[in-house]
Length: 112
Length: 112
Image (tube, rainbow over the protein chains, first blue to last red):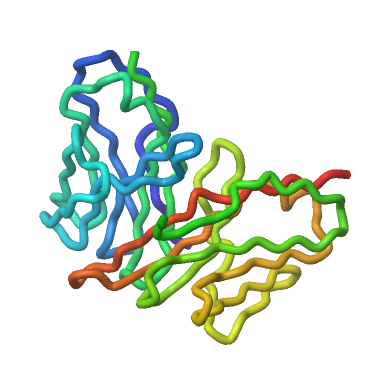
């Protein structure tokens, strides 16, 4: 079974802080994704990566950056957290683009 | 027009009922399709892939209608445990990458 692990289930940070969300997958998947999910808006893609050190912007990259130094790890960085970044963040991975994605448990991030 | 559209529901059905959801997509070049299930405050989990010829997994049947550009999910003999939000997912090869689009989900509530 694919295992996608996110570093925290719940996180509370303050406005202006730099926030790191970590995601690790154990299936040697090429592709990894970061989404946020808000009520009524569904899942929105922030960034994705199709290989080590490669990254592509998704639909809502503003205020975020990512890092993929190792194949199994994909980090999401909030450079200067703001209250409108309070959300559920979901990491996913997949072997190829045509295969279904496997999600981590999600991180509920609150920015105060 | 949204790339992927679902009726948000909620669909309130009695136990044992049959219920069907549709999901329409706008790009006729879309290549692969999936249904996910998401429980409240949890991550989406793959329910089933959708194949051109239609496919069944126990009480669940998925179908694809390329001519009308929609996929459907049929649940027979609904159980209380089927209560969840069902997300459709559409994959499209775009600029060398697979563009993955999630619907916003249809909420199902199975009532005793």
